Image (cartoon, rainbow, N blue to C red; front, side):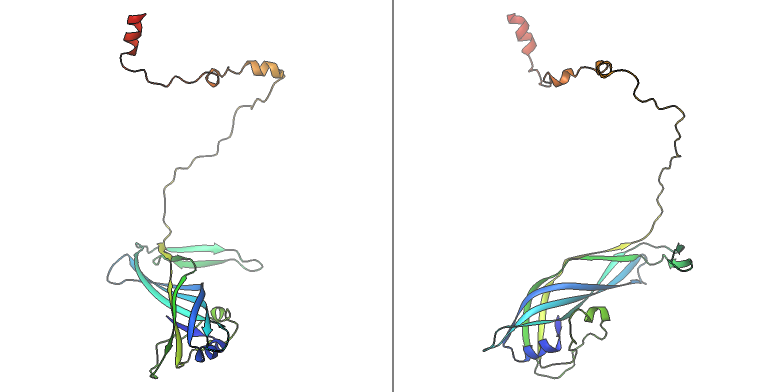
Length: 235
């Protein structure tokens, strides 16, 4: 993936001879679900991962300079999500405002992505000899760009940094469904609950059965075949 560096990091890379990766952090995952028209019950889940990558740029004379930038990765999976055409109306309470009814369409399931921070596998510095425009990122949410503390360079510089990462994630589809569960009425006691009486502690203790099993080991050993006959013979 191409690393879209900050302006300051890009200036450091322009004078560098090599780069080294340090860490990567997953900032956000944008998810979109669309129905697959040629296969009923299946849906395409498009995910765009946004990463913040940290690294170092090395020159021949100066000490390493810390660099950071944005990496974007797109992934598509096809999952089974069943079908559903019911419309669900829910009421939500707004603090200080009027309650309203919200309409939700259940024909699309909800996609859930669980992911951990990735592992940086490689980072390399590339000299671009031609001026061909590379397909890049068109729109970056403001919440993403605010994580870099500076403007990102989305132009086409002659020196670019590419990064390879390993991402572990679990992608699934969720849908509300109706389950039949047994229900029971509330039980109202019709008898008086009798607590402790006027008996003394010794009387209460005398009613407890003596725990014989606690004082004698259990007889769980299997008697060998022929043991009883031999015992009676020699006795």
